[in-house]
Length: 373
Image (cartoon, one colour):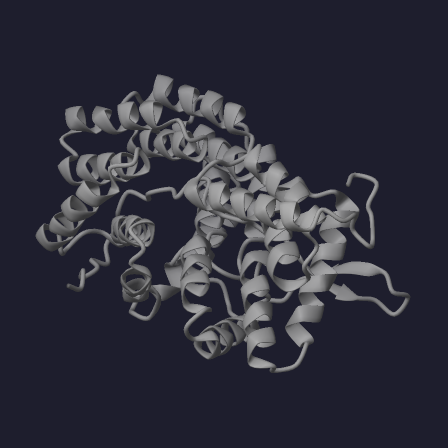
């Protein structure tokens, strides 16, 4: 079954809490210092540039908020995460307390920094202004799932019934039911939903296939899970696929076909510097392929910078690095615990369990200790 995308203006579904965001990339300076360097080979999409022109010409706060929203959407795609910072800068200048769009964008930036209480407060302001705001409802559902609060997440889904959003109600609810341990039943229902709804907007298509892949993986159907994601990542519209879908695809594909992961991610990296999560998978594929050490060295530099800054937003990436690329059970356990304090989704829980198992097998101190370890 192939879900056919519809290319038209749609309500944007925020995949909140799923994104690991690297705002910059790292290179080695002549004096062995770590400096920041950005790379931009591909031009921004035309729809973003059009909003930039409009915001520049009008100078209005409302258009600045629209531009911030555009940057937030762009930043979810591989290679563009630096635009989260640009969106934040715009929002600092454009304070519009009576604008639901402003508070929605503020909530989005807050949750990207794992400031979930702030995000929920901002969403409350959105709903005061627009009680039926669909994006606010879906963002709250996602935040509750990240916090493993499935009861609250399901309560948000049920509110969709009053808005006659039957497809979103089903998808939203089935995602939560799968997290509650009824994955076999929810997965069957999701497959039926996918067959019945073959012309859904692209953002909803991405959400549906992401949930199908997650539940197939939970049921240990790894090949099927990978297939759901490849419907998006190797088809028209793939350039808009959110970063976490690429990361999940790479993790599912690495054990069977590291060469495909290597060549796919290398091509992406040649266009724009990848975020930590994807660069790590590229480095892993490079190592498995014995294709040199270039990307492994780049990843090592990124990790040096993250540790120098004591960057807790990248705890999951650091835990994966010390589990899979440069084994250090003590550091992996430390960062996995940090990550679990911020996010409790299935992948976060699996990372914590794996790190604990490795640490219990080899609890020796790290060779290079940081003061925080």
